[in-house]
Image 1: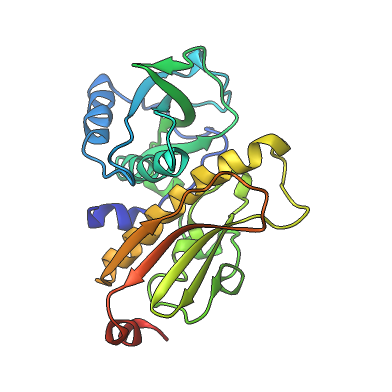
Image 2 (image 1 turned 90 degrees about the vertical axis):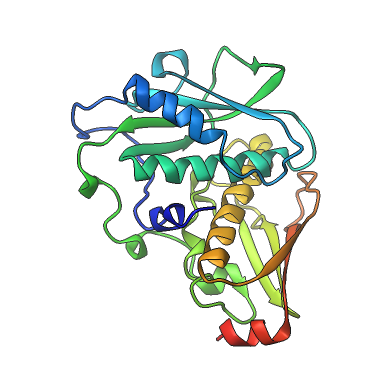
Length: 262
C-alpha cells in the first residue's frame, strides 16, 4: 500500500452529515477514476471476489446529504467481512486524498442486493468537499479509546497510538492488540453488556468489517515504520465471546522487536 494512504489517516474524518460542504460535485471522470483505483487496491484475501457500484444517493436508504454511495459487494467466504473492510478503507483514504468526504454507512440498504453474482455487504456515502479545512484538523482531538484500552504489552512507536483512530460502526472500536513474544495478536473485542445503538443481531457483522478497517490501519502503520512482519488470519464465526482472535502479526526477529518497542 502506498504511503499517501498512510498520510490520509491524519486528514480523514467521518462526515455524519454532508452539510456546508460547498457546491462542487463528483464528476463522471472522478467516478470512473474511483472505479479504476478500486481495481488496484490490495485485498486482505485475494481469493475472495469483490466489486463496487457507484450510484446516486437516491438509489439507497442513506439520507445524510451525500451525492453518491459506493456499494460494496462480495462472495461470502471466511474473512469476507474483514476483507471488505480492509479494501474499503483503502478506498476511503484514497477518496480523502481527492477531497471527497466519506461515511461508512452500515445500516444502509439498496434494492440491488446482488451484483455480478456477489452479495451486497455495506456502503460508503460520499460527496465532494470544497475546502480541505473541513476535514480533520487535529486527529488527536478525536474521541477514541486510549492506547491502554486497546493495547496490551509493549507499545510500538508510530503504531500503537495511530491505529486507534480507525473508523468503526457507531464508534464501537471493537479491537484489542496483545503484543507478546514478538507477535501482535489482534482480537475482535466485545465489551460485555455493551453494543451501542446497533441492533443486537448486527453487532458481530459490522464489527467484523471494522476489524478489516483496523487491519488496514495496522498494515499502513507497520509499513510506514519499516517494521517487517508476516500475517496469519484466523476465521471469525461471529461468536459472542469477549475476545475473538482475528489475526497474528509475527514480527520478524527479536532484534527488530527490541529496536522499535518502547
